[in-house]
Amino acid sequence: MSLLDKFSLRGKTGIVTGGGQGLGRGYCRAFAEMGADIVVAEINPDTGEAAAAELRGVGVKSLFVKTDACEKRDLEAAAAAAKSLNGRVDFMVNNAGIVQWKEAELVTGADWRRVMSINLDAVFYGCQAVFGIMREQGGGSIVNIASMSAHIVNVPQCQASYNASKAAVRHLSKSLAVEWAKYGIRVNSVSPGYMSGPMAGRFWSDPEIGPIWKSMSPLRRPGEPEELWGALVLLVSDAASFITGSDFVVDGGFTCV
Ligand SMILES: NC(=O)c1ccc[n+]([C@@H]2O[C@H](COP(=O)([O-])OP(=O)(O)OC[C@H]3O[C@@H](n4cnc5c(N)ncnc54)[C@H](O)[C@@H]3O)[C@@H](O)[C@H]2O)c1
Image 1: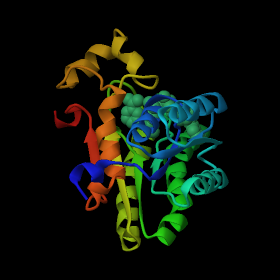
Image 2 (image 1 turned 90 degrees about the vertical axis):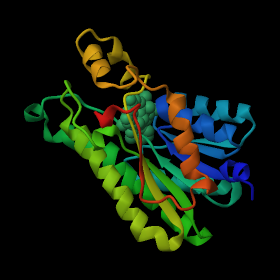
Image 3 (image 1 turned 30 degrees about the vertical axis):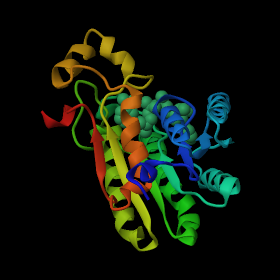
Image 4 (image 1 turned 135 degrees about the vertical axis):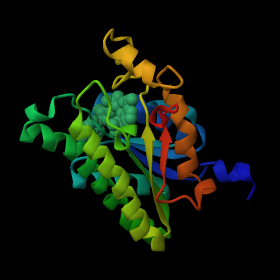
């Protein structure tokens, strides 16, 4: 197989949670452009349907499955739908996530559980949902979306719950990589820095926050969603057959300084 063929996703089937908007929607697009069939596992039916229609327009098979990623059963249904496309599930991207900015002393139990439920529990359930299928077929690739907040403490905003959840995603991914290596299942995480888009992009123009983030960023700008695609495509492709238990920091150098 040529190196180019190893990067191709033609014939592969994958799932992206939170694939209806933002970075997840971009991952879906990238995978489709590389030839993969995709299940968009999204809680919002409007964006989820639109994403799946966009992917079909690219020429691949795509289904939207309404999924609350905090619910194991929903994730299992998304996995079953993906298997129904081509009889296997080659990759799973656990991307759905939220951030809450609040001083730690003000974070309620409900606040904490909500962040942990979506950012951490859902990632674990997503991994479990595809495990049986991947073991049976002899392998697969799981990519869990962490954050540079798994490595550093962001300022000036207070987001202890997010930082803790993402650090846990990073180490959960390493733990599963070790446990599931014997089944041929690779598990990695990706840690994006500040990206343009709904979650962080608008704060770059905030008069208080923007200058602080900019002064801390070697590239002096947020990343564009497309600038994450190379890492994602590599990790789910056969070109990454020896990459497991890794965390890919894609942050324009933010965590270096
Ligand atoms: N945007 C950034 O700068 C940045 C940086 C580092 C990490 N990340 C991480 O990347 C991921 C995506 O971020 P984004 O900026 O695209 O966010 P976003 O808010 O634009 O998109 C998140 C998507 O997840 C969906 N979602 C939310 N809860 C869900 C649930 N329970 N079940 C299923 N879907 C659900 C939303 O409907 C939405 O479509 C998150 O895990 C986030 O923490 C983002």
